[in-house]
Amino acid sequence: MPSNALIEVNKLEKKYGDNEVLKEIDGVVEPGQVICVIGPSGSGKSTFLRCLNLLEQPTAGHVMFEGKDTQSFTEDELTTMRERMGMVFQNFNLFPNMTVLENLKLAPIRVKHMSDAEAGEKALNLLKRVGLGEKADVYPASLSGGQQQRVAIARALAMDPEVLLFDEPTSALDPEMVGEVLAVMKELAEEGMTMVVVTHEMGFAREVADQVWFMADGYILEKNEPNELFNHPQNERTQDFISKIIGN
Image 1 (spheres, rainbow, N blue to C red):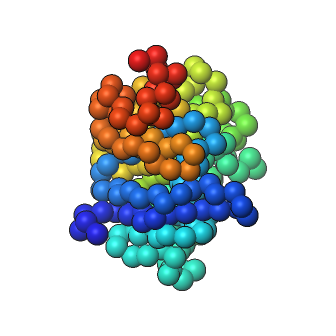
Image 2 (image 1 turned 90 degrees about the vertical axis):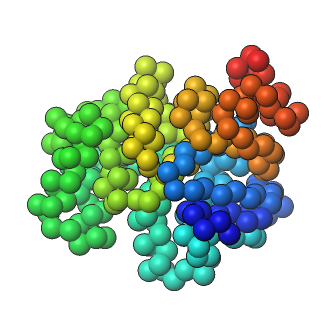
């Protein structure tokens, strides 16, 4: 295993009954890398992401995190891993009965045993970081979708993760709100945050990713730097997808 790998995936498979969703997936994520996972709907991208932090239990293969096999983890080790491998979902998952500030403070207080004052200060700083410092005391329902997703990103950052997993973070947003979320993600990438992003936003993948992984039919069929993958795709399935999405 590469000594600097943060995540390594070996021969990962996932089946639901006879339905084989992931097939012999291999991949390495190094610290500071941004990996964008693209591909047609139903190709297994979200399942792959959820297998990385064992929200889905792999059927076969291994996910290594910082050199340790996650499937051997105790419940306590699994909890710690999930703190360090933050996840941002499509649909925000904010608690509607809590203010924005309370949403951000909850996990640091409960899981990290942070004081209310310390968690509050951290939450306010993170809200400012995502451009929502003035929204601390409002409830999620009063926010736009783009604002809610930025709160969800801040909430994930509140646990000081080593890596952030993004599962189609803009797919539930109106088009005019997509840019504000992608701008926050781009800033995180520039600051060196390790990210694995399942996305349909090809412009973001082209501009921000260190590597783009193309998935189809349960396989990762091609991995490359963005310019190479988008301009000179090698796999026929990749070529077909790129030509339909981008018109190359």
